[in-house]
Length: 255
Image 1 (cartoon, rainbow, N blue to C red):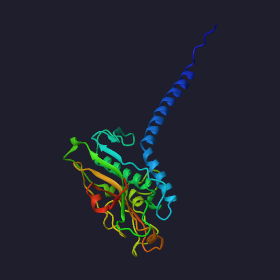
Image 2 (tube, rainbow, N blue to C red):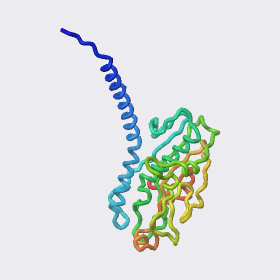
Image 3 (cartoon, rainbow, N blue to C red):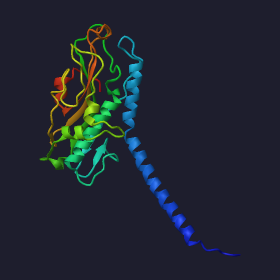
Image 4 (cartoon, helix red, strand yellow):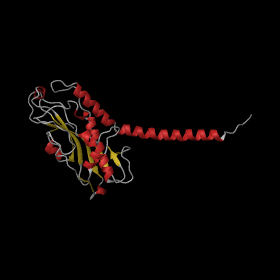
């Protein structure tokens, strides 16, 4: 029985095929890990869209499915819900990395809450004594070993970096003018802090690693009848701050 040796050319082809298969496998694994990591974001967005679509007289048969993401930042990694993140990978934490994490989580929060384009959250029919409704997207803390550090430059990062796959900065994405008017002003969404009708309150923030932070979505929600008659309108905002900030800005916390 004749035995034919594999030619050098065939060896090269087989080697290229094996290397390509390994690279594809590693890429697919990493991509699958990122998709799984952000599955909660997509689940929340679908529930937001469904609730907004099925609202009648301010109420809906669909409940929001938007659990909080718990993010812990270490000097060499990020853990999301106690699992190492594949989205945020670095050898050593820098100010650039911190700002990237915060910018991305702000973007994801705004994205999953429909970017201020849908009638988010239920509301009363006629009377409403508390208007500001909030949903916490992310709770962020730093590893205890990092105490004493602080980071800044988030505002510059938001203005100078573009969101993934779009020719638009994070800042422009998060400060989107809304179509309705509120008390003669155009409401704007702002990352931190926010104020009706202007962007003059947007200032830089110094991140203190000894503190816990939250990224949250805030809605000014008048009663359904007031909104229907255009006496008042809903307005949506994105927020970032220490935990106590919620006590000052949020009357109702849905999660």
